[in-house]
Length: 304
Image: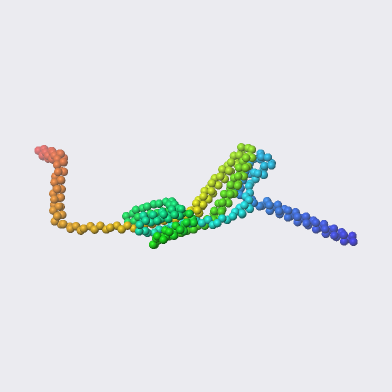
C-alpha cells in the first residue's frame, strides 16, 4: 500500500512539472507574438502620430495616453454604406449640316429645355467650310435626351463616341479618407487645447496644418467628381460645306506682231535711256580723255 502511494505522488509530481514547463513555453510564445506584431489594422496616424508621440513628457500622467498614436475605428470604415453607382457620362459627335445657323439654334434650344448650358463655343471659317465646335453640359439624367435630340437631326455622323465611366469606388474611397482625416484633425485640435509647452503647441499645429492641406486636396478631387457625375459632357462639332463658284478666264490671243512692235519700241527707249545714263558720266569721260592725252604726250616727249 505504501509503495502504491509513493508511485502516485511521483507520477503526480512529474505531471505537474510538465504542465508548468508547457505553460512557461506558451507564455513566452505569446509575448514574442505580441512584440513582433506591427501597428493595429485600423491605425491611420502615420507620420502625424509619430510627431505627437515624441512630445516631451511634461504633460501629466493622466494625459499621457492622449499623445499616443490615434487609431481609426475599423467598424466605422467597414460600415461605410456604398451609395448608388457614380457614373461619369461623356461623349463626342461630329457631323455635316446644310445650315450651321439652323443647327446652332436647334442645339441651343435643346440645351435650354434640358436645363443645361454651353460651356465652350468656337466658330471657324475656311475657304470652303464653316465649322462650329461646342462643349455642352447637361444634368446626368438628361444626357441621353440630348444625344437623341441631336442625333435625330443628323443624316450621317462622321463620328459618334459615347462613354460611361464608373467612379463609385474612387468616390467612396475619397469619402472615407476625408472622414478619417477630419476625425484625426479634430483629435489634434482637442489635444492642442490641453498642450502646456510651446514645443507641444508648435508640433501639434504643424500636424494640423499638414492634415488641413491633405483634406483640401482630397475635397478638391471630391468636388471634381461630384461635378462630373452631376453634369455630363458632350462635345459637338458640325460643319457646312460651301460651294465656291469657278471663275472662267477668257483666252487671250498671243498677238505676235503687236508684241514684236512693242519690243522694238521698248528697245529704242532702252537705248535712249542708255545715252541719258552716259550723260551723267561726262565728268568721268572728260577725265579719262585728259589722262589719255597726258600719257600720249609723255610718250612723245621721251621719244624726242
